[in-house]
Length: 420
Ligand code: UD1
Image 1 (tube, protein in one colour):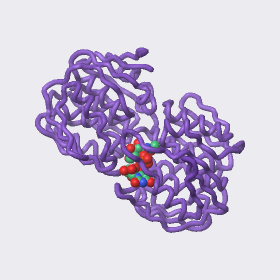
Image 2 (spheres, protein in one colour; image 1 turned 180 degrees about the horizontal axis):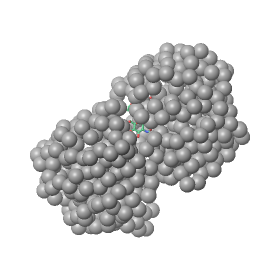
Image 3 (cartoon, protein in one colour; image 1 turned 180 degrees about the vertical axis):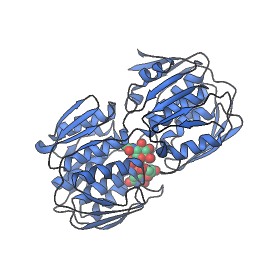
Image 4 (cartoon, helix red, strand yellow; image 1 turned 45 degrees about the horizontal axis):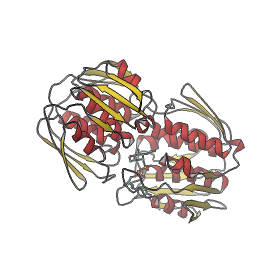
């Protein structure tokens, strides 16, 4: 295992290029299975979750080439329909193979994702949607096993107790692209990653309307062709670097971003009194010593993203006053609180709400990473803290941040990777 050693308190400066969005790449790469020919995808981040999905696609029989952020997927050799536990347990996102496998081959066997540190993470909405399309689904020895002769379009309400579901929308939209007749998804996710998937599917010949709204209509077609497509930039990675800039009182520029994907985040930053400059595809943070406390509520897009909640909390530990963060998407996603407090933060929890009393400074300490975004939050706090911070178990970060320490080092951060 590896760890990061961070020498905190250093100012950052310069420009950092944001990679392609992992959460768009995963469903788009999975959807390439339903295409009649080879699909070429650009701007794919070289992170562990993508490497895991490639292993699963190869295990299924697809031929995959991944070089310089471009992946070529030829599904013609697919002859297996199982995503085994060893893969799914390390990457919950593999659930987005369900829809494509069922649509193209009429069968799928995916290990049940189970819980993880951010909560119980059920998949009832995926199952409900697929059943409505005519799939027969059973739970067999820890696997969801689905079979269907021919998928048939239907009207499906996909809302759950926590709002819409991103990957359930991805699964149903992809499956419906090859179903017979019309499918309407009510309470669909509006996330930019879903719009990206719809754009790619449309290029393959799918008939999809209304992506980006809560109502998506799909007219099923008989076949889809392989295409070339480029994935959107990662809005969560962009937000993470901006928060690294703010938390260290530095001016940095993040490039290759779509500012409109970050509206709710940028709006909150303005409320906190920190400003930024917007370029065509770039955002620049401004140097500040102190910022105001704010109340944040995470919500599905276009609300404040749950995937930036932990990093935002790291930033707010140094605010002037008392901030709150209420987690409405994954109410148990607070594993980072204890680690931030080890660095001198003052955070208490009241159910799904964190109360963050701003402190004047953080101090380096030994910490442990526990999930992808929680780990990023600890690194940000470590960069802002005085002295040395050790972050162990950084394999979580490698799941979703491409060249994290290289990019931070290029901004002037003192961070190095060591064996534990
Ligand atoms: C995706 C993202 C993840 C992000 C999350 C919310 C990927 C690979 N992952 O995960 O990074 O944090 O969106 O923006 O894109 N739910 C149910 N039943 C279901 C499915 C979900 O109740 O069948 C609940 C979840 O427990 C959660 C909420 O719905 O409370 C939203 O989850 P969902 O949007 O499905 O998250 P994912 O798509 O798994």
